[in-house]
Length: 98
Image 1 (cartoon, rainbow, N blue to C red):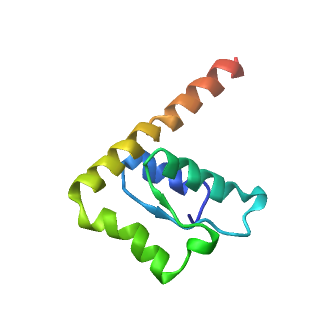
Image 2: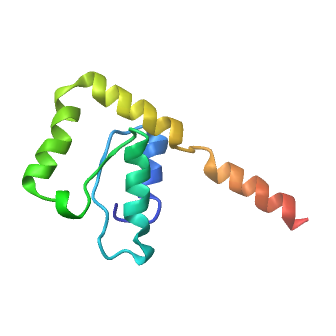
Image 3: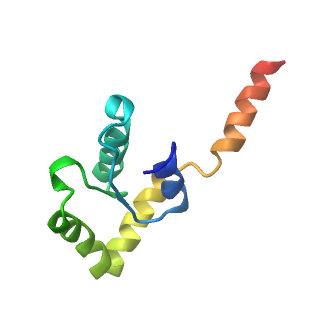
């Protein structure tokens, strides 16, 4: 994840992803978000000790080898994504602005 909300944008697009959280992120929020997506089968999270060539190979291998696994991960990601988030936020802001 390289920017705020990047993991959520991937989820909204339904893209299978491998997330490597920045170890020095404030409050460890990147790891928390990556693990949340992984627990929902919506992504693979490589955290701390798993960030090795072997860990990457073991994590990415099943997704690369199985079209069904890619479809499942993509579907799970879509269920967590909010492609209409900007519209929803606009509605909330406009409702309290008047």
